[in-house]
Amino acid sequence: MLVLFETAAGYAIFKVLDESKLQEVDSLYKEFETPEKANKILKLKHFEKFQDTTEALAAATALVEGKLGKSLKKALKKVVAKEAHEQLAISDAKLGGVIKEKLDLSCVHSPAVAELMRCIRSQMEALISGLPPREISAMSLGLAHSLSRYKLKFSPDKVDTMIVQAISLLDDLDKELNNYNMRCREWYGWHFPELGKVVTDNLAYCKTVRKVGDRTNVATTDLSEFLPEEIEAEVKLAAEISMGTEVSEQDIGNIRHLCDQVIEISEYRAQLYDYLKNRMMAIAPNLTVMVGELVGARLISHAGSLLNLAKHPASTVQILGAEKALFRALKTRKDTPKYGLIYHASLVGQTTAKNKGKISRMLAAKTALAIRYDALGEDTNAEMGAENRAKLEARLRQLEDRGIRRISGTGKAMAKADKYQHKSEVKIYDPSGDSTIPSTSKKRKFEEVETSEQDPVTPVAKSKKPKKESVAEEQEAEMAAESPKKKKKKKEKKAEEEPEEPEEPKDEEEEMPVSEPTEKKKRKKKKKVKEEEDE
Image (cartoon, rainbow, N blue to C red; front, side):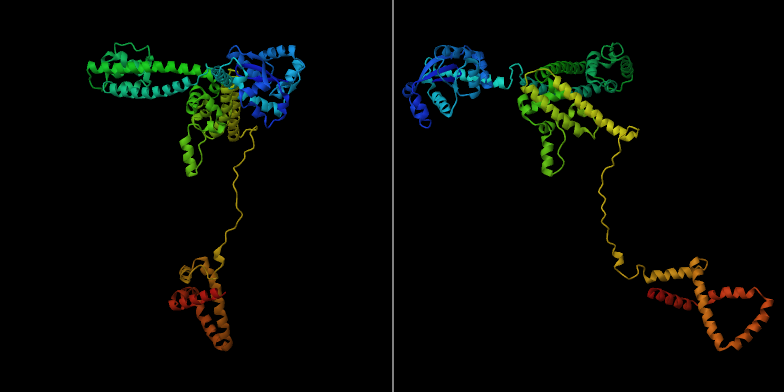
């Protein structure tokens, strides 16, 4: 039996001298305790050494993928020519199928073979002659690094450390430029304060100050190189009526030196931005297409490297840069942030406030795919990023159009869906029905009755008069039954006296209720209130 053993230095083919020992799998390791015992069981038949690391990487890659490499095929052909009837013990069953198919060699793979491979590895230096231990370790380390780079599709040209340093320097330059511009405006503003209101651009302001110097030179200086004609005319007009103080030539010289520094830093910043843009397109083209070079570089800088950023899920990419807000929201049990550094992307910036959360979530999902494609993919084109960005823009238009259609109310508009509000059907208990006592007090009823009788014109007073008259008529009928004769005589006498003055009795009858004493009225009122309460 032959044994195929792979090493970082090359392929080794051993001849098994005593096959009976392989049947005792549990005690096989005892036969390899010393180099002398190992040489009694195995003998080196052939060793195919790799020429360089590239060949070793190609052979290792072929073994990982289960393919038959050129160097292995060459070594096996030499053995097949001599001992074609022997079986070949291998560690990979998939590779054995390929060897049997192409070279017509019977391959063996079993637990005993796996144990044999482990024992060979323990005594590899003694079994393979001509390879010093230092050389084997160096070749193993080089092959491990090369294989790791190949698996991760890592290229030495794609170094993201430059991006991290460039974006950090760019942010620092922006801060320094802002401070320098504020200092220059404040310093020169003592001499020519009107210039700061007319020229708003910082770089144009510094160039103007450097060229003009003292404001008395504005009228004779040509500023058309960096100022439009209208603004140049305003500057010259303002210089004639300026309210600024006079300064010395030494002060103007220092201000001009500061302007030189601002202009140089601005030019270097523009150059650094172009460099960063080119590096981002070379290292992470899909990420650059999705969120832009500045946001992409800040994401890489925040994560530490492009590979670390590729390990983050989309939810982490979405809130990357808002860690303080996230943990503060978790601590106070409030809403977590919807976006971090990704908020400055153009797709999120051009959406309405209502849809920023949705777009940032979708953009983070597509950006995570683009980052992994850039970090681990073989291609260096930006087709996938452009395709995903087009999908996001279409989705953005769909969200924006939906809101416009609902507001416009056109014929093609979608049905307007009102916000769902839960309407409770629970009825509230009315406690006013528990008590039989009238809600209004007696004093209030007394006051109402008094006001109604004081105003006889009101309909309430008119409605109560028929009751009074009916009571009076009943009393008169009882009296009439007792003495009918006397009343008849009195009525006849009165009838004789009435024709002379027909209008007076009416006045007397109308004046009678007014002349009644107030005490009787109060008693009648109390009686009526009691009757109403009893009813």
